[in-house]
Image (spheres, rainbow, N blue to C red):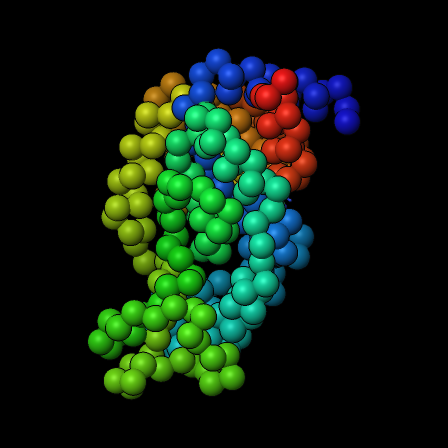
Length: 250
Ligand code: OAD
């Protein structure tokens, strides 16, 4: 490990020990090592599929069969196989140490809950829960058979996953709770997000304005890295989070 990287990890560990009260904001990057591709960058989902054709609510309402067949079926197959990574587990450890309160995630994969985090705000909803567009009946993704697409309710209505499509609002409670977490934390740990999608991308800015120290972990620089992040640690989430946890426990 380079000296510079070591220094950044030690600096981050010192801040965590001194202030505690961490809120984590996670994006697709934290799940890359769980086997889920990110949306942007190398191997990104949006390189393969046009998000406006497959992830906009208008496209889904116009042609649910097409969106299920092309994007959602593949997502289900990927998410069904995914397991929490060392980075997800490190957040659980920080919670057990009494240093982390809340995880705000843009991810719809449920991996924070699967790893054992207790307070998770799902900013973009959850792919595991679905509902009928006509009668609102609830379903679980495990009940969905990918051999008969698109899935339909017994009432005849199409079934949708309860994740936020482009063109839809963020669930009000998630918005409100995230704001509260951002203004009350002392440290915001931003892991694996390109910070390009609003309003999630503004959460670290809100935290910073309220006096929090922003620690960012990402293999690539983002819009936050130079102006907003106080400590930018360049690297993969599992490796950096494991090293950060070690430095905190020393
Ligand atoms: P993106 O795909 O935009 O960004 C993923 C980030 O993870 C990039 O900055 C990568 O450099 C970084 N990354 C890649 N591998 C990593 C690793 N091993 N460890 C840590 N970081 C890594 O994902 P998000 O920022 O989460 O919206 O995207 C935000 C929203 O855009 C998503 O929630 C989704 C999408 O359209 C909806 O579904 C509504």
